[in-house]
Length: 284
Image: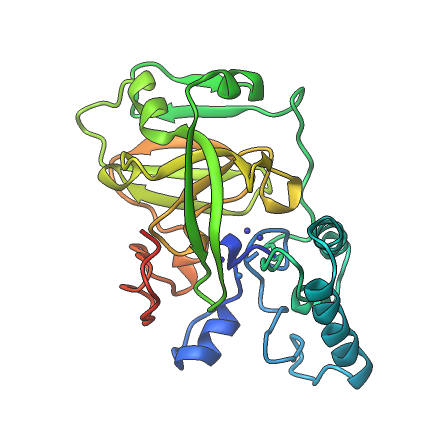
């Protein structure tokens, strides 16, 4: 769920323990990722327990409820500020408690590593390689110069939370694949991230869907670091852990290679409402 994994988590990278508790499956694992993505590493638990299984104290619980009430009563600008604060705090929080705090945007912030380097327009690079005729490396400016596609869909985390009507904007992945010249032996695409740990994969047919983006913007703003910026993957019809944060590499392969959370028990084909033992409403 890297879970915002799945913090966004998994916005893209969420916790396996959360799912284990939910559906009773014996799985090894949300941000959502205690690292810094949309999923957690097992320390962020919505039932109010830390990785040691100890209950969270009464003061923390009351503070959480107070912040939730604040998000309801304050204006959108203040909500964005609270969300930004919590996102930054999650990067430096060894306890995982910030992953339990609600915020105005509805996302939770998870990560699978202890820290993630920050990239900007000067330092960011995206490589496209593997079974292609024309490998390429894109700067952020070059990605922004390509035709952009905007879509508005619900974001569904496999741990249960959903953020409705979330705009994403970016370059269709199929455009980058076509520019690279995919070879006939190719059957899948693997994605790697500059956190140094997270990975994901799609079949070539899935990767070529019109609702799969190399996203540069989210909620009509440039992607911030906590949401996987400056560039992330966005796979609209699948659970958010497929939408890898901090995207740095696109490698065309023969076969699908299980990603970070698939290696820990989650479904490779993660269609919302048709996988992972869940019956959520589809996001398409």
